[in-house]
Image 1 (cartoon, rainbow, N blue to C red):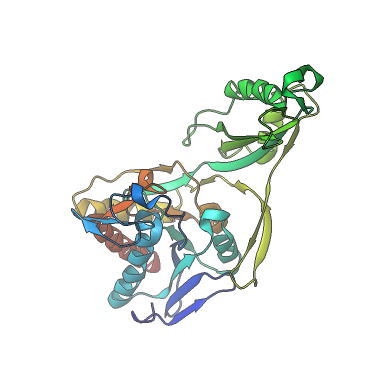
Image 2: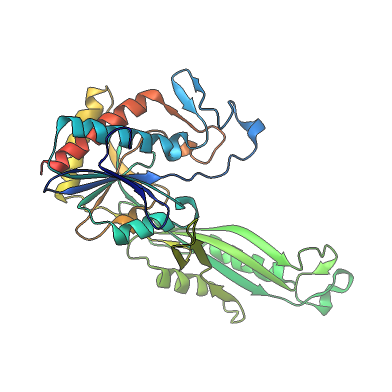
Length: 350
């Protein structure tokens, strides 16, 4: 960003990399995405080395290719492109930290950085995204009583109790319909205790439920819905807590593992502007314009405010994120750089 002539470049207290181009009075536009990635995983499962930046058949391969270092690279250059054209206002590019582990960077940025509109570069196949379902993680502690497996009647098998709850969970009634097509509840983990007792009746078990919620289906509703699945009053339900700390310890926060749902107002002027700009830009590159919603959570709820919508648009396919097949078409990068420039100029002219 310094090399491209940004007026201010700094790391904020949370460790986010922030660059600003100031051109007098006017709106403030934020282009943003996250710097962190999930781990590489098993390197021998990758078709190409995951940290080499290999380009094959017009695709850039590697961890972070679409999720989401490429979008940030496009944003940095697009901001410089927009400055060369000229605008009035402030254009900010921010690479945030810890998105994959709770969102500390964007939570801090949303509270400390003022702007009028946010463009978030999560992968979207270079199509407009206007929100996503939320995620509520719930731990279900199931009781039992330890005994020798050869005399199991002396105990109470927590796995059998867990199985009864899981059978009920499979048939849970959930909100349906709407633009996000309803909520979902998925059991993702079952851990029994003691962990190393292959010949021991488990005395306890913990089930993790990954609940994807729509607006109006709030964490309290989620908890009530899960509790209604059992008449066993000994079963305990809780929201796991997460503690996040910046690299230098300057910023810390503790919060439930809850990512809110987000829906940008479809008739908001910023959304209508994005629709018009992106329809034109993707059309110029021979693509068909579409709009919809992400099926995964993003930092959007941490950045949005009632008067500050978040516009989603990014290069690459969502389905490749977190996989050993992560890559992004170079053609998507060209479209994204063009689109981010045009979005910035449209908002800074308004």
